[in-house]
Amino acid sequence: MAIEVTKPTSADMQRCVARFSDLSRCDSGLPDMQLPECKRTFLNVLGFDQPKGDGQYSPFGDRAKAAISHLKAGFGMSFIAAETGKGVVMHTHDTIETFMAMKGRWKIEWEGQDGNESVTLAPLDFIACPANIQRRFECVEAAPGEKEGLLLGVIGGDSPAAEMSPEAIARLVEAGIFPPEKLAA
Image (cartoon, rainbow, N blue to C red; front, side, top):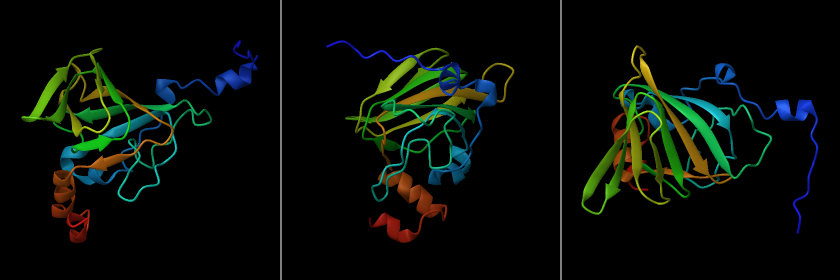
């Protein structure tokens, strides 16, 4: 069966363009972004719907508005900017999450069978993290002459979910961001 061909207007196609210089920076929307070690900024390009589960979060938070939000692409894409030593707590997704270092060097860490393991990505290096593994990322070196690194994140699904590890929840309780009863959940 042939693929149906459509012929969009120029205005329709312009709605599908996201210029990096026009992207809005968002530094809130996920609980761990309040932690000093997790300060980062999303520049959301292509969005998706929020997950509905209790204790589940959208990978890019609920405040990072996507430049392109009218398409259901089956994935979301966002740039993540962070200073050296800043990143995200250990968490998991129900879909594949991929990263490409754009500027600076980034450590991608995961919980393996024998403890935590990691790989460091230099600019244009890429990793695909399978679904259902605990993982985190951290900027280990800002781009030369700049104060932060830049990472491209792409996550599969139309409403992927993120859940924080028990250790991450404990850190948020310790910081007073989550109430103590979250530890029992």
